[in-house]
Amino acid sequence: MPQPNILFFFTDQQRWDTCGCYGQPLEITPNLDRMAAEGVRFEYAFTCQPVCGPARACLQTGKYATETGCFHNDIGLPRDERTIAHWLADAGYEVGYLGKWHLASTGEAENFRERAVPPERRGGYKDFWLASDVLEFTSHSYQGHLYDADMRQVDFTGYRVDAMTDFTLDYLRTRDRRRPFFLFLSYLEPHFQNDSGHFEGPIGSKERFREFPVPGDLAGTGGNWREEYPDYLGCCAGLDAGLGRIRAELERLGLAENTLILFTSDHACHFCSRNGEYKRSCHDNSIRVPMVACGPGFTGGRVIDELVSLIDVPPTLLAAGGAPTPPSMRGRPLQGLVDGTACDWPREVFVQISESQVGRAVRTKRWKYSVRSPGASGWQQPAGDVYVEEYLYDLQRDPHERNNLVADPALAGVRAELAATLKRYMTEVGERAPEIRPAGEFVSVAGF
View 1 (spheres, one colour):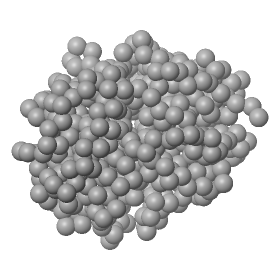
View 2 (tube, rainbow, N blue to C red):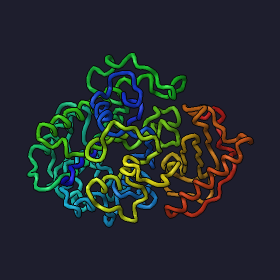
View 3 (tube, rainbow, N blue to C red):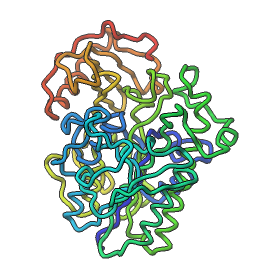
């Protein structure tokens, strides 16, 4: 078989349970559901950093956010970082990027948030480029612009998701096909529109999804999900329609059989029910994402139950393209779970949390354990030397994370074991072994 084409379909802030293949009862994602029925769905997929920019740095490099230095938003990816674009280009791929980048700007000194990203800031995507560093700053849900490879402004009208999909179809139709392609397609939706402070689905979303079933983790909580969820679902439905159009075009072009599509998101969304924003916490409604792959190596309608992380995506994409996993990458190719060759797959995922806190967490099948560095600024400090236990949840008995057990004396042994696991992950990625103190001032009795 020739090298497959690879299309990475990336959404922003999408919960796993918006998708029918994960149990959503409304018809939000029929195209993704069909893709899951044909390919492979990862039941337990998680981000490694629930903030937009850091998660993207992890995906581009295969390193954790503190390793690249991109531990919060508005830190550009270092120019000397090798990315998946570099590795796949070396393996013979045409490498392209379309949509939201979020890895060029660093403060006001290097501010590309509302202007074109220069070539040296594009992470090795040298063959095709149509992007904005922060797409929500150069567009609104029904109009805006991106910048092409020559740094020229490219305007669009119509719903933003549809425009991004149109640009993708144009790329697929006009490329010369001399090499296999790797296209990183980065939508903004269902992320909220910054200057309006609202999620903006296609016109009519409020009426179409007004009678939505309330997710169990949100039922009875505060936050703004009551007014925002219909448009959020509208965004997800719009994205799914785009996925359907892209798959149909690949079929029309005779490329579908030899194209791998991997669908996932950078983090989830708790609608201000856990903190004053939408993510930046250890909870599943901040870190759990959909992940579905379909194409060469990912067929048969299988469901994988092992825990997987966004940190596993970069080596997966390289493996699909026939490129070796560099030693710098922390994850493992997901192909090993699909074909049964993976040995000693990790029983937990490791999460770094910034901006809202300097936090660390591990999530196993049963337990969620999270610590916070007291007094540390999540905008200024990538890590701490001292952490305090903040959350412990028994996910078997409490899947919606309502009952915080971090101060339960009967679970001291569980916490000690999870603390040791957490320290191991932290030191493996270059952090100093911290002191972890028992829960104190940060205990939240309700778990919120």
